[in-house]
Length: 546
Image 1: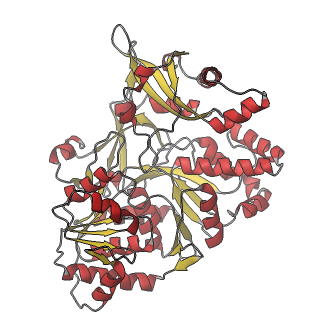
Image 2: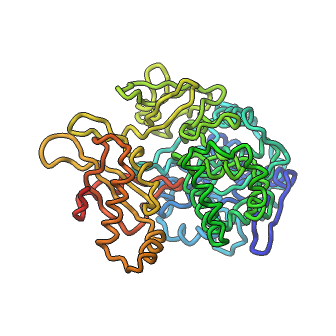
Image 3: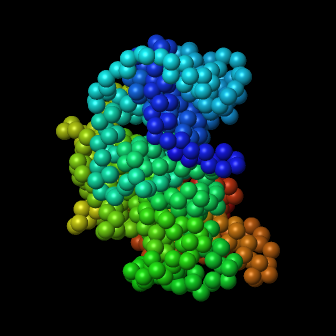
């Protein structure tokens, strides 16, 4: 494991990690922690987070990873609702914990860093004390709960997802069987490790394969690229917006270097569907990859949301394989992944070994709800039997709430969320994600949120949208026109872009009204827009008829 310490990369070996994990486990047992007790971890991605997570499970307890990006009230809810007895925490969160109302179940706080905070133990001390203990470690059953992961969610409701050891390890072994990963690989851990995608695929999977892990210093695309270059990263899992930012950064540098012809050539390839030049990508763009520090990358994997095919085609054209998969926290999380030797960019791929998938309640467009079965499906929601029962069919299929269609090769295409679907006055189903996908192709639109607008008379919704412009691109556009843009100019330009990019959509899917917003949409830790926060925003439309 490697992590940036401000001066360079400090390293720890598997042997050192093993000793630290056993010490933490024995210390926990000495504190009276028993099988089934909950112990929470709150902090940034680091070897200390990894040590705590594995030590908790080795002691027989259940790990509760806490979303470090949540507000204090949300963090307190997770620790309190789970009934966690001990909290392992990064130093920067200590002041926030001091300001919280005391959590009744919490007995001890352990800080990753050296601290003199009253009543707080240091992880170094815990490891020293545990290292001198000979406490017997418990045997674990595969069907015991390993972790409770609270979904940050886009609906505002946080539920504790109980994942067993069998759920997680079968998921890891299934992914390993499809992708060639080994001891020569280095993973970049960049997504928050409390989330199931990073925890399984960016943390446990590389340990399972004997690979190295570099902990990224930040989410800034330039620092991510530096970490990749400096530590020889070969593999990374990320969310779509991360790859989009990396692509945009590379395109800017290419333009600044006067390589506009190369950018134009790549753009032509992307627009053509990536059908030209792919076989020549490795030798053709070798020097470009080397200058970008990405020459050792073997695989980029995207998940957590729909990946724009043009982003995948851009990286693949440069000789860096990027493909997407699919899953949910409740599925540990991977259920589908594009096969590296047969990628379909508009899909999330076929099911991984051991997982079954079917579509139910299919409409006249061939779209229905995605349902899943397999050893990776979660045990249930913590202390919420009602929600658990609602999530499964009578014959045991897990209802994902996602809508999709399966093609002739068994590849799944996700079309949207069931709860997000709009129904027009003509009875047509409209999936916001489809429209957002088209509009976000505009150079002048950074983000789109499509919502239903109730009709003034009669039933059904009209299609509305909140648009967050790409102000950087707008500045360039208006500067070239030697004009200072006013609100009306921005509004007019966005309207033209909406008309342009929705022309290939059926008429009933066309946006009827829109509003320009001046701030990015609030998102979950995996960069999904929190739609529930904007349900009433379309009532504030500023004359934006299309």
